[in-house]
Length: 305
Image (tube, rainbow, N blue to C red; front, side):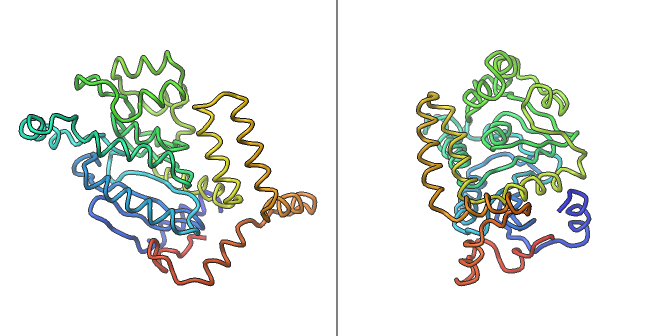
């Protein structure tokens, strides 16, 4: 389905959604779920309750084999402002002298790693401000799309801190050491066009097109072989930590294993027959033969197609 088609349908109907205390999620297209951080009054700042809800939701979605891609966005004007500074100030004044640990550190660290390790390709749809831990949250995703209203910054240093939630790992790998140093050492906030120029985001779209564009891209990924998608995500992530020989060895065994599945033969046959491939038929049969997974309700599973 085209971006325009998805946008029109999204305006005509709102699928039933699943609400938790700090976020909600809903089926947006075949195999695609949109997860929205929902603390707009606090800039979608990260607090322990949000991490709890996010990890719980991600666990549920990963268990539902019909879900094959995830879009992450924020409610209101912000994607995520990072740590909730009001809560952080309260912690510094009252709890730090007892606990002697960085604010939210044990909460945030597992969250970043959980997003990276997820089987689901994740697209950050950056609708507004994404700063400090909020930017790091977006960096942990596989792909980033932002609206023209988005502002991004690795702003920890403005609070007297170094990057604390993966920024010092992601930025040099995505942008190179020089640009990473400029963002992290100045704490500058950049606009969407500059983010596109330096490669921080994949594309920039108008605000009203952000979710339809992200859903369309996620839908394109979800239509591919789920086995190949998961293997590809793992391969791309692992190359950040291994040399060429190890990466190619890992790819050899992944490719070898996928020769035994149904998708390779379907892909080759479809190409030779000059037709679109029909992947994931086994997942459809699984879904038809078992009770519904509580992760996504029957109404929420209604596709926008």
